[in-house]
Structure formats: structure tokens, C-alpha cells
Length: 238
Image (tube, rainbow, N blue to C red):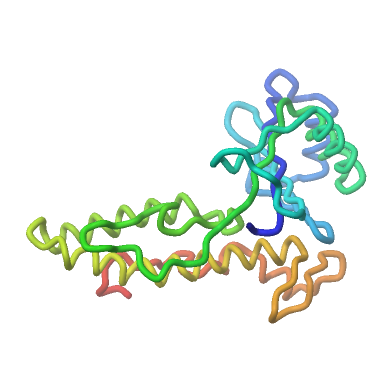
């Protein structure tokens, strides 16, 4: 468990593009629609971005003891009382324009945030783990889908290189290429989440966006993700 969960929701504003809510949100966050937008306060942060078909996706991370989850899903159903409490907290923490978006969102829900310590291996004979089975990660690197796609690409290239007659060497090479990469990416994403949530880390002081230095803020940029643009595909490129 990461130490926090996320309130999530999607606001459909089709037909209300010129409403006070949407116009106010665009004024508060002028870059909305061009990129992921982050807003940070001490001990919490929110991510919002515009989707196709006039929708706003928002994610609000909340520090908490581990919630009790029924079944195997990390998505929790929420009661009306929980939603109303969330709305009240939103108006205390976030700008009114964002709090209004949260209040007008139908059926918000909670995702409990987990990851997994990096595995020591992802290959057993001719059994290969890829995607979230190999490296479940927190969302703060915005990398999970990319990691899974690259797993498939690298595995395909290794199988192509070694051929169907050598199903021992291909998985071994896949593991030698991908395991060092995804290990660093999982740990980096975990670190970014803890920094943004103001949670303790052994090698730095607790992050406070209200007094953070420019260098501390630069540390949060996504381009600092290990292998951000140069993850190897074949062993020759490692």
C-alpha cells in the first residue's frame, strides 16, 4: 500500500462548454487541454486533464490508512456520505473552480494505490511475465501502459532474434533487458508519489510546495523518469 488513495471522476461538460464551472476552470488552469495539469498543496496533489468528447478527468490523492477493500478490485464503491465529505474537503483545499468540478461530477469513486517491490526475475523457463504482472507501479510516472507495450516489443524482438527453436535464450535476454529498466521506473514512480504527497523519504526532507526551491520542483518533472526516452530494445543497445 502506497500510503494514500485517490478520488477519481470524469466530468462530462458536453453542452455546457460556456458554463461558469468550465470557464472558471480554464481560467484557473490556463494550460488545461494542452497537457496534464498538476496542482499541489502540502500533503496532497491533484491531476486533471481534458479527454476527447468534452470530458475532464481528475484524480485527487489523499493520504490515509489503508482502506478496507472487499474482493480483489482496487476500486472502492463509495457512499453518498463519503462523497459529501469529499466535496466539503475539496472546498477547503482546492481553488473553488476545481472543487466545483468535483462536486458536479457524477459517480466519483476511489482507487486505492498499490505497487510492488521490483521482482528479482520475470522469467521461469519459458514462462515470461510482462505488463502489470511483472511490474505493478503507481501512476506518478505516467508510464504503466508504455512499460507494458515496450515489454511486448522487446519480447517480440528477442523471439525474432533467437527463433522458435530457442525458447531458452529469448526469455533470458528479455529479462536482462527489461528487468533493470522497469525496476528503476517502479521505484522512481513510488518516490515521486511520496514526494508529492509529503510523505517521508530517508534521503530528503518532506516536500512542501509552498516553500519548495526551484530545484526541488524540477525533481518532479516527468522527464526525470529513468529511461524516459532511451529504453533499450535489444541487448546490443543496453
